[in-house]
Image (tube, one colour):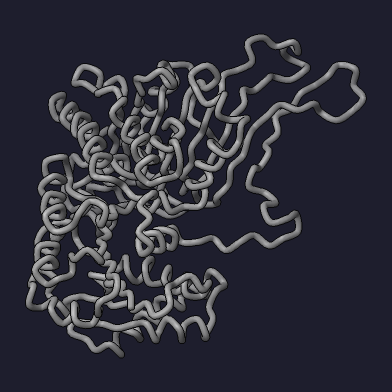
Length: 486
């Protein structure tokens, strides 16, 4: 009998994401028969009390997504168990090992990464790191390369690399996976996916929320380590990597590592030219007054809540093509997107002015708030005017996937795919150790450059798109950030 252990099973991540994901997997008939789901945490409560909390959390999420079903809940309820443990104590983990039986065991550490080393050491002693065991690590693992290696060395002492699944939930999003299908399942894109036809690439992860009471965590990591080191660099890798020989996990991840190794280092001298740090001050967000980060924290801080970076990939495919990345809190809208901006036509036979301007083609991969892939092309305006006039139109490559009149499929939680893959031992969408090392190495160079130049965050008003310097990052190269109305 297989078992899934959720360390930190009563915490925010488990209740908001992991347990609802498991419910939906059970609802769709995708969980293995006989799978036992065991919540493990310090809280002294009975299994019945824990199941009641899970019921409340899962039902609230499922009703919003239109998927609540009593029969599905009954199946999931029968799988649930709970055990109060000190995960750093091998003796405390012994009863947990007994409840798992002799089947495959997948352990998800939904706890502070600072505890990973002590927990995996205790798991090894307790017999929860045997060959039939896997471990899932939630990001961020460490706050720099040195701390990552310290934690990951402890993990490597307990588990082989093939047993370790470092999760980045962005890779579980349907549109991110569809990017792989778009690139490598179609002949029309790959010949264009290079510096001959692509002008630049933009990756934006915007959030309207502030840091709020999460500031103790955020003050340690900031936007650079919290978002760019993992989510955004993973998206960059998927856009920029060479075609893998197949979809074997190591084939895909080998190509991603090559991209990370090709990133041009950001030196002390270049930091001011190619990077922007920002911190939001009081303003208006979503129509309501919003405090500044310093006010939320209670005292001044030099932690960045916004970062924009120009990254250059020094290889044959992408030489000369800048990759612009930006992410921040208290921005005007919640938006995650990848923009592939193609070069304009070399010569326009249509002239200018009354015939309409010719916009360069643009491919937009949108991850949130909606998931969509659209391609902007030029089209003739309908009519009998003898002077051919052009207009830009957007073609959705996701529209009508199930037929013109079919209802759109339920939007899955990204963790659904990743939990299922982890339990099946498929590591394609997980981060390998050398990937994480290379990402931390590059981010540490940025951080060191900021420190060496005493590069303090620039103020930006809550509800705006960051400091003016973020716009200048593109405008001085003759480019601009993508907007919704284009």
